[in-house]
Image (tube, rainbow over all chains, first blue to last red; front, side):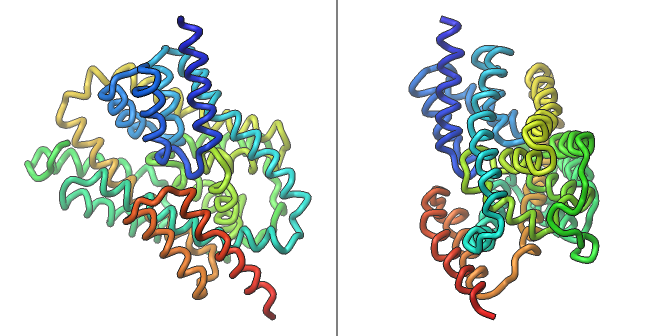
Length: 182
Length: 189
């Protein structure tokens, strides 16, 4: 039974990883389908808690998967889930890199990179606004987001300072009765 | 910040230990996704890549399966130290976040009910969203903003942010014309 769960986690996450384009947050609906609806490894509220917890810790958004593996099957679950989400795409990335080194003088490859760059900027901006809408429940949240964006655009300071400032402002606003706590 | 990073592709030597410490820092600082901390370490602190090289690496990684920055980690590792570089860079990237994740899971139930903790986490999340916005505007420094790139950046933003279109659809619709526009632009003197 236990082995079935471990194998089930591996299959669920490795297939999700290989069909994922655009990173971890885009996969959340697919994870929900696999873990809650198809396999019933966790309840919907355990799933929501994992998503919230994963956002507290730093690191790749994909580590949400490690956390879910932990919730379902402890340390072995975490290890196999992390392996499933990391290794198959990494093999593809490595082969792509080798191919790109051979082709690096090709005009079309250069055009692909230059043509995709504006899409990446638009995509990153969209991630920022979607994250902001999910994170902010009041005007203080939006002021924090905007302030952090402006400060970070013009400075080369360590981003950790802004995260810490955000935490302190959130705490103080709550203590003074200004902020809505979710 | 072009004047600070004049090195050409591959001109800078990055040792294995540089690679490991750099990716350890990126993982450790990567709140709300790795874009902000990766840009901070790779472009601003260590200057492994110019802003232009950084956005182009991200562009290739965004159309491959898997986490965008995890793919970039594999490629940067491979660029400097082959397979060994990729494996060590990825292990370094994941090491601190996994430890912190386990610590958070094990302790969260003891403190999550405190409104103070929730308020502080909420404030940190708001600031983290701002960091992602700033990463986008900084990535924009690596793009030459003519009519076509502006159009495709805005269209991608609107499609994903307002219409919540799936990424594969946006890439399928926008990438071919945008790449053709870049090819056409490149042919002109």
